[in-house]
Amino acid sequence: MAFCQPFLPADENNIASNRNIIYLDNSYSMSNEVDRDLTALDAATEYVQSLINVYPEAAEYKLITNDFSSFS
Image (cartoon, helix red, strand yellow):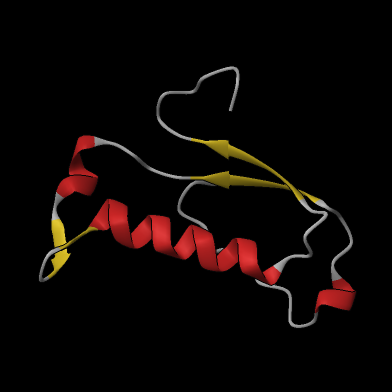
């Protein structure tokens, strides 16, 4: 499941649920650079932000990282 492509709704009106789960890999390997002065973790964080901007403001998110904290 962690290697699946994210689902981006084509239209905000088609969003069926306001509850979303986002998995962000924050392991040591994400400190590798993917571009000049850009780590994989920074790129992933920017992508998560772009995902959040797709959904309405009332949407709820649960962010899961490799810490697997109960307060995610």
